[in-house]
Image 1: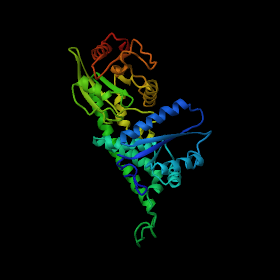
Image 2: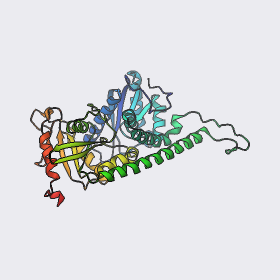
Image 3: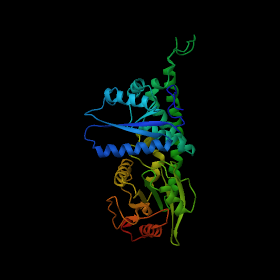
Image 4: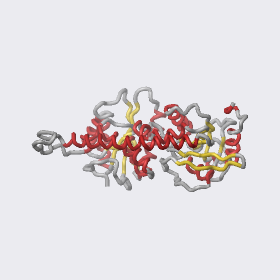
Length: 376
């Protein structure tokens, strides 16, 4: 179980825990945006096995620097958690170390913010050595400003004559040094991996390279499995795959491509994860074409599109030609119910029924023809 005495919030078994979600509407943020973000954090929590019992949204003009939300609302939440025996409190945003410490002391229950939830999911999903290193790096950078809250052993270590440190150092300072050293070591290892991946991408530059990009749980890996006739892990949950995978795909007798599956995107993806997964995201930069996979059945499909396009801009991939591939058409019963505008250049598919897959292959083939407008 998740206890108050736990020292590391990135190593818990969340199964069978109950929680509530807290969000804040302030500034120019619309209530629609808040509700969308809250629904997402609830799904993220469920992915870890947490049962969300309720949600609290406070309207304020500004964020409280000490408690994030007002103390009156926090008292209401504290009473609710006691009365309903709630295990954890989840905030739909990243908290500062001070805010997290103050809130945890106030309510007497463990606190997790959005970044901690996402890091926990990534840690459980990481399979390759590179992905594990990337997640560990992001986790260490997240933990650094929260050391005082995570450890309570602040007694001085005994000093030894002739040993650097004199009368001794605070245990907190030793912990910081250990984490900094580990961050440096991981960064160097990832730089070597990045160099190796650049060499591989250079070798693949003479091939036809296509990258899958899209919101988490849009069906990228299912599409990869269908096109490559391989079986990669794919499940109907957020971030079922975070490792980058490249497969050779036969399109027709005239064309074969290298298809790259990348980590799914999400709204408010932590900056530390974007930075840590730089080498993985750089795979997209080597693509000739991006297939933007979209879950057309989601009521938040347009918001998902906006988030993916923003991240593509941030990593400098917005100049690469894109084909929008609307997946899960089988869930629409033949009717576009969520107001999405499907242009003639977009493709509607279902990886479940295989609808539209041949059309997608033909569109990919057309793209790589010498007289294609993008190749002029």
